[in-house]
Amino acid sequence: MQISTKQILNILYVLSLIILIGLCIESGGFITNTLYALFINTSVVSHFWGHLDLSGLYEYDHGHFYVITVYMIIVALAKTLMF
Figure 1 (cartoon, rainbow, N blue to C red):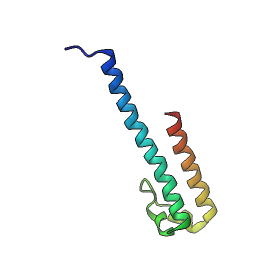
Figure 2: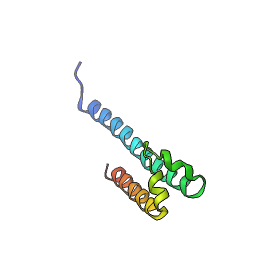
Figure 3: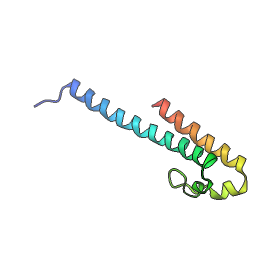
Figure 4: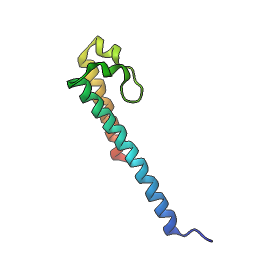
């Protein structure tokens, strides 16, 4: 049995969809955690998305924390959009 070009393209299509969904989840996780830390519960910063501990940065300055999280969101969204 030979593998046709159409089968290979279908497999690559499914793999790319799986990767895209994973990148969207990562971007959404950063956005959700940042908004949750901003408006609901600030204790979340000690266990941020991706096991990051940003509590020291949050205690140092709230502005720096927000700038860093916005940069993380921009990078995650750029990664998703470039894919």
